[in-house]
Amino acid sequence: MTIDWTVASPPGPVKNPSGGLISSVIPATAATGNYEIDRRRHLRARQARLAAETEMLTWPLERLWALRDERLRSLLHHARERSPWHAERLAGIDLDAITGADLSALPAMTKADLMANWDRIVTDPRLTLEAANRHLERVAATGEMSYVLDEYHVFASGGSTGQRAVLAWDFDGFLHHHLAYSRIGLWRLRRSGRPVDAPGVVATVYAVNPVHISAALARCFATDRYAVHLLSATRPLGEIVAALNAIQPTNLATYPSMLHLLARRARAGALRIRPWRITTNGEPLLPEIAAEAETAFGVRVENGWGTTETAPLAYTDGVNPGLVLCEDKTVLEPVDEENRPVPPGRRAAKVLATNVVNRLLPLIRYEITDRVTFLDEPNPGPWTGRRIGPVLGRLDESFTYRGGMGDLEDVEVHPFTFRAVLGEEPRIAEYQVRQTERGADVLVCPLGELDLGDIARRLEGALAEAGVEQPIVAVRAVEGLDRHRETGKLRRFVPLS
Image (tube, rainbow, N blue to C red; front, side):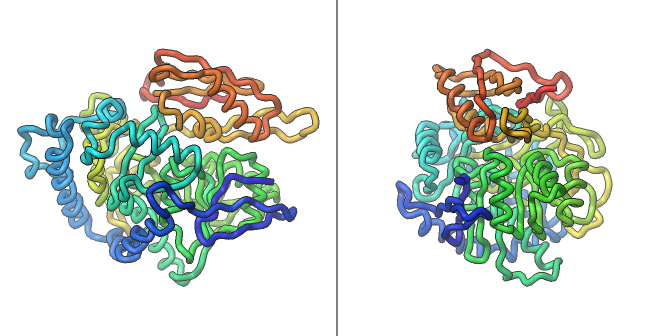
């Protein structure tokens, strides 16, 4: 049995219960140098800053906002000086008067703006969208990580809307992205009474190719203290279960929809693991999924909200309902469909996010179409950021196919099986996948010429690898996709009734 996963640190093979070898990979020598050596700069920076970052979770809110505003004004000045696109949009604005409390003087931007003006937005003219796409194509093909221009990371994102974006992070911004998550782990360790330096085993069931930021973060910041295993969410569920049983993770991170499948296997006795920490991200965590997982595994599920474009936006604190905002790294504005402010207690149609920690590709009042409610009540602690209610994005529903002639079990296919093909194709602007009895009908909005037959064959191969017998996939090019009348959002994955 071969499973697409990575042992980031330490290297070495792991056996599955039947005695076969589960493939293991460590970061390989990259085109611009040895990534294992290069990433040590990030590890040293992480070690130097993690303790201080953890303390920020309980800073007074006013102090967090002061730091955020300092970073905000620095970002705005840098964007006006180094980005031709932002220079035009920010001309004549008193940037020193801007605070996170009121960004209405600044124009908003969308993902379409980003992709149409990428080369004029990026603040390092050496980095172009063409070069970024070439890098992503190489990484997608080889799985090898490398820094771009010796200091940057580049990623592709289909996001929750299916519209492809290319994101570039500078050295410090990428570190901030990791610290926003890892400081929560350290804080929880301190509260749990466990030794802070105790070794652990991390299993993530997301993406394994570092064109995706989750895989890249895991590889870049893996240490000897934590063996990090990256399992592909596209693999058949039975293989994932077997790998987890072999790994015996202390920490499990995955999509809520995948956690739902794993919890069902755990309750049936097939999955036999006892992690002390479970985290989810990338999709809405429905209460019934959290309850089922907590019953199956005996630990409280932690949930996060984030995007490839920003550092993590919010996390559950383990004490109170809702999520607590990471106030120091992003300015978030809840707005209606016309970008007018929405007060606390009322659900926003979307948010405008300003990433204040990544100066390479400035995203200023960037539209994120998740529906969020800022809670109109004080935060009782222990963290001090403002709280929001559950994020009402879409839960990407898995597709269930009937088992073949000799297979009594149905085959459940995670949406990432489709995203891994469609989200990495730079000539697809948007897509929608509609399940059929034996495969899927896929609608794509192409950017230029596109070999629809090749995409269909790749998707059929991915479905066959996931266990679907003789899958049939049809891919059609369309000019646009129908969106939800109320939210304006796209339902990317439509299962059979």
